[in-house]
Image (cartoon, rainbow, N blue to C red; front, side):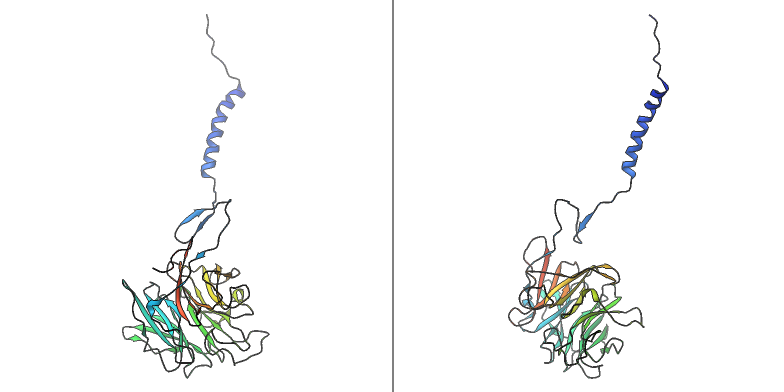
Length: 341
């Protein structure tokens, strides 16, 4: 019997070659085609987006009083060094010789606070703000020789100790009050609060004596930013976080993503609350609407003076639940847990 070789038509031959080539091409396209996937991160870990689960706000633990600092009822304005090993704060009521203090973290906890003798005077020294270099300290004071009201000062540390404080001058200070200095993590901006009048306000120099704890007369406090890298720049008001209420005590988280501040605006838990706004465009050019930190951090009392720890998940602040001011600490976590250890 004769055997005949099977012959393929031209279309069949083309299909025989084209199909495998198309499969390989599709596989390569799937592998190499640029794709994006949304992930969410808390700064430590990342998770892929889950369409079936909505976004949740950060959950903060209840704040615990830093009893290790002692029992005085007027400790406030906490400020952590960049490495978290030094805690600067104010002790004493404004108008009654308030002074700057520092405590150091050890294996056994915080040391006994000691006053910064080189910076303190019979006037008030309030609101310490340490730059990330650990050697530049800003604060505000009503000592003689200023521009009027409370002014911002700066001191620098060397082997000889803290230098004589220098008034920041009329570029920053004026006849009204300048409070609550804070330096951004990159050292580019100095934030502060002031009751200087803005457009539409009548000047009234009879305003708060020293801090957000005092009763206001007319002008409200707003948050300002000064470009430290431009000697000709003037402070600019951060309109995105300012309201017709009192806004002050600004600080930026160590990662530069959040601006925290205190305010008595509507929508809080009562008194002054802690708020934060996400920074979307640097430097401080884009700010989303502020959000209240909510309970259990904020209460019907006053919560003030936010300071964020290095990793961004520890929050130091002042509160007066018993008509006294004392630093406390809260931690961010996925579920409530012990705030202090």
